Image (cartoon, rainbow, N blue to C red):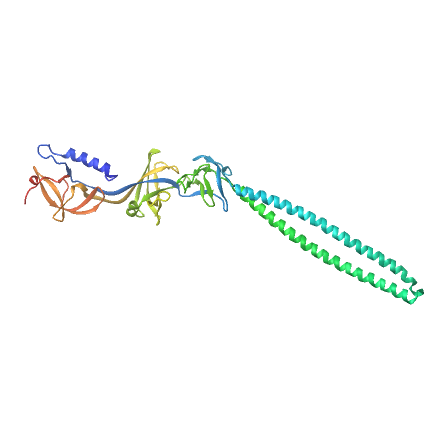
Amino acid sequence: MGQNIIWLTTCILFVTLASCQSTDRNPLPVFTVVSTTFTDALQAEGTVESVNSLTVNCPKGAGGTIVFLVEEGILVKEGDVVCRIEDPMLGTDYEDLLINLEQNKADLSKTYADHALELAILEAQIQNNEAQKAITGLDSVQLAFTPGNQRRIKELELQQSAIQNSRFEKKLKTLKIIQQSELRKQLRGIERVESRVKELEERIASLTLRAPRSGLVVRGVNPVSNTKFSVGDNAWEGLPLLIMPDMEQMKVKILATEGQFKRMKIGDSVEFSFDAQPDNQAWGTITKKAPIGQPIKRRSKVKVFEVEASVDSSRHIPTPGMSAQCRIILYQLSDTLVVPQIAIFERDSAKVVYVEKGKGYEVREVVPGLSSPSEVVIMKGLEAGDRISLLLPDDQQIFKK
């Protein structure tokens, strides 16, 4: 009882018709009250997922178009290429950086050559000044025999050579400091470009995604199209493109409507069946309810709520990605009187049923308890074996008190 309204209604009609009296005595369908288990349940669809799974995400700082994606549901080995992403902008930036790096290195080579030339010229000047000073020094032997004015001129020339030599030495020292500073600046610039090149090389390499372990691979769901990822789709940072489930423990993700979500509660029992495995059944409980709904599709005002259910036992372990039919048991009460909702009528603000008595019906007030869309528990007013009408009898068929 209670799997769904259509199934229940069919069963009720079958039981009713089987328990009806002959058409001559009573043309109305009746239901025989029995003590049974009341079950309030609802049906929903879900998808099997692994409790412990690894995701292969689009790398940090990356984005582009998927140009290769491993097929759904195949087994791969650790290190196998499972996805490739192409980012044209990244490739363009990389080529530009290589050109920039080559130009910087060429500039550095030119700087080394210019510095060498400057030092050679300055050192030649120093050597020339030293030679001139030596020549002047040789003439100083004759200063004792030279007239006063000429002696003074030679002394001044020697002083001038010494001053010039000091200036050249200072200039050489300063030039070396300036050249070292310029070289350090250029080298730092090259290091920055090389670092950037290395970073882009790593990012380009990261666009080739490899399996983190051996096992089954399932494609992720594209949040834009709400379908499995495929070649040609766009990918961006952090997006789970592939899932590698641990096959030892499974769960079922249910996308419930708002009405279903409000009726479910954590701890409710769930029975699972699988179209892809008709001989398989599984059992579990509701373990998690997402507090916020999400649009059923892009720009839709209709929302669904994500609900997770555990798979505690099963005949066979279901496969990740498999669709599941979920029967959520909202409430169960054993050994109680349960009647169809359609057998309950309202009369003078009271809930009543029409109990078969001979060729007519007796009005009997009842106290309903728990209910579902198709059934209701009767707390008081009926006994097992009573036969109640499923349709409202005519006035002449009702016994008057």
